[in-house]
Image (cartoon, rainbow, N blue to C red):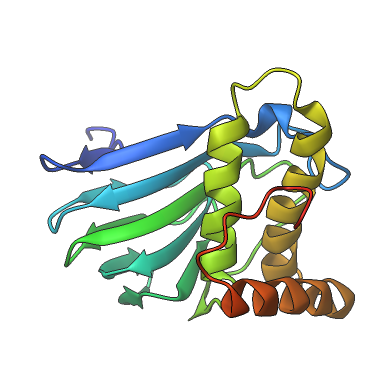
Length: 193
């Protein structure tokens, strides 16, 4: 029997902007728990499948729609929603329309624990995109380590809140989300956040 492997197709115009989070040390993440993060823009027709994924997948959709399959589950991920697929299961996603998203791949043996399958509304979509874009800007900037740690804490705190719901953390992010909604076009600095 032939061994199955990952299949990936990115149509022309598709972009994946990867960010190295290893420099964003924090109390939540040692810098090795997040294998990969990318801000993505895909035309319709992008698809990826893993027969038995080695890492947990977190996919946050900002615009457009993705269809997905995972073992015995399938559905449509829409703007403002999050999908969590645990390692070890079949994972497949395809963009049905032009999409903007962020994905994270987490090491299964890390401090994140074993997440369960989840497809739900994600109220922190705009906040996560804002944080991810700031991290992308800072990833290669030397001398900004004092900004990277709090930014890392915010990003990993949002992921932890979603993976293991914490009421105190949820209140903190609710306040930050409200401020972003009041001034959505503000180009906040990390210190202001």
